[in-house]
Amino acid sequence: MEGIVLNEKNVRLNVKAETWEEAIRIGGQLLVDNGCAKPSYVDGIIRSVKEYGPYIIISKGFAIPHTRPEDGAVKIGFSLITLDKPVYFDGDEEPVKVMICFAATDSKTHLDILKMIVEFVEKGYIEPISSMHTLAELHALVDSE
Amino acid sequence: MKILMVCGNGLGSSFACQMTVEGVLKELGVKADLDHCDLSSARSMKADLILSGKNFESQFKNLAIETPQIFLDRLVDKNEIREKLTPFLKEKGLI
Image 1 (tube, each protein chain N blue to C red):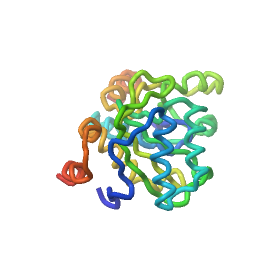
Image 2: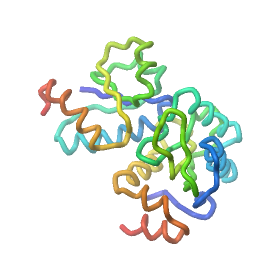
Image 3: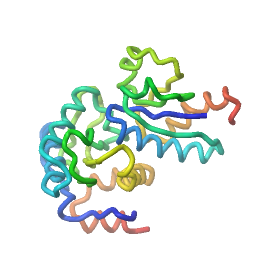
Image 4: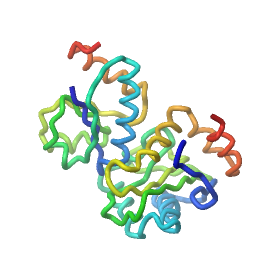
């Protein structure tokens, strides 16, 4: 996966969050900390979920929180978090265990991040990632090809 | 033939869906133009088919778009996409 780096700056495993909103704030804050988004972007993600429903859950147990660039995206980037306890979204029966938040500056150029997201789903990585404890385990899985 | 994937912001879920659809069509040997956009742009985009998430179904009703629509439980589920897309492609004589 070219151009995609998973490191201690953008990955947090077994994060404790009581609600989906709290989980998104944690994943979104990583985007802010890494200079990819302004705090308003995180508010935008939450607003977007409330407005449109949990369509960011694109596969079982897996959500990709994001919003429009104009809500405060600074540059392309992502964060990956796993939840210690899965969180439920209103309107979806299955809880989410893994989240990849991302910031995009337009509707096309974040192709690499979307490719990673789709690859994780198609290769069945979400379930194993959800029970990992270390970044090394994550690298062992993702870099294995 | 043009297929349009639609979601709330038109850049994440719909884009991921587009990639999965691309994979399914490749397996089926069908060539199509694929694109993605947000709900408010969907009306002005020309397409033969719209794919979107189930949670958008009621919003599509309000938009009264004439293009045929397929709604998915999961936007990146190859099996669901293949299952729901196949009848449409057969009807169009593409497979």
